[in-house]
Length: 63
Image (tube, rainbow, N blue to C red; front, side, top):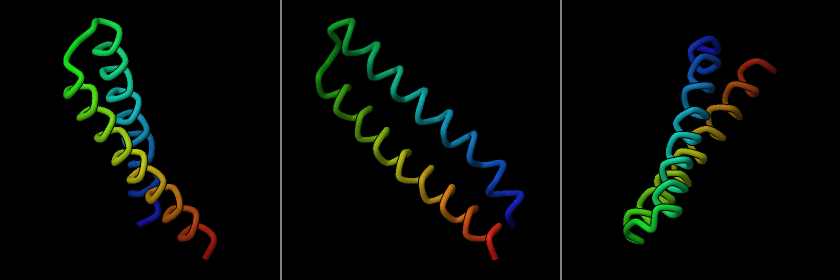
């Protein structure tokens, strides 16, 4: 189980980075503010997921 979680962490962090960059690109180009809001909400959700994965992995490794 730890190995699966350990391998999902970089994927989750990469997803956060991709959504963040997409949101910043939309902001710089002067795109729709509702699209920026949606992307930033996705970013927050993905950050939450990444933190949960990291904490679960640390917990399982420490047992």
